[in-house]
Image 1: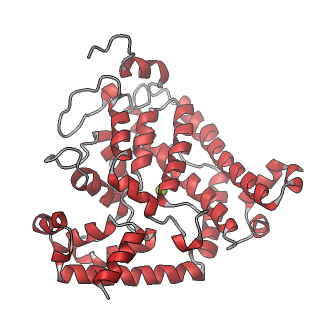
Image 2 (image 1 turned 30 degrees about the horizontal axis):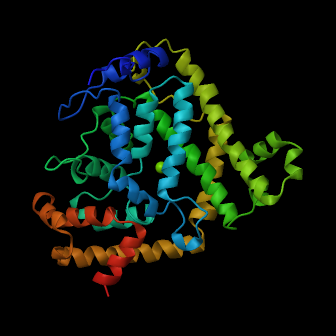
Length: 372
Ligand code: MG
């Protein structure tokens, strides 16, 4: 098929992107060389590969902060990911960065989360201590490079170097010898903006805290009320909660765009390589960074450490330890491909990888079958 009237990715990006954005034509490519697609750029293809992966779909059955027995209002790991992608694209587009790369990185960023969120991660890390521990960020790379299969017998999604490197920068932020691409920095900033806003929303809706308490104790919520002005007095509680959360997102996005965006636009960088010299630049700055810290400390103390969540955490961790033990003692209870993986990466790691891929519900089913 001839390209004909279709604009090339290079033509489109040269019109839309800033010089400091990651242009597709400068990509370091893929481990296994592939022919270029007729009308989809490399990062767009990465976005599609993540979106069509089974690990991505399973995010719908993985908890973010609250488990399924809390009803169906709150975020799952999948809806969190979608909100991150939306906010990251808003920031990326405004800064004239590569929106396809931003979206690929955003959809990919939490793909390695095990069942039961950070509680599950901590339990698996403890189980796997003798073989190097467990990190959801590192497991995301295992999914992309080993566990997902697009075309048999080729292993992995064969993502571009830039998407894999962006994820690697999340594994150990201190170890990186240069700062991540601006697109990866945008996703990191969007992740934090997103969970601060939606955890506040979910916590109020689930009646773990009240908006009045938040207003009394947190500068950021006071700013949101100031922004709404007299309109706040006329709103019903549900509408008021939504308006405050909306303003909470706006405040943070505006801050990143006004402060970090200004630094980026005045930088004079002529390439994405130049933009990587120095410190991380796209992040909350000034008084907003302090206000965010205050909100996050509040959420930690009052929501994440809420007695109900601690009880769920303890139960989930005990179940993960017992399923892990049962499968290490008898790996033949796993599906055949994980039994085979025991030969290449060891029984412990293969059991850990199998458990980490489970949704909360599938995990509970397996626990009931294997540990009763
Ligand atoms: Mg996240």
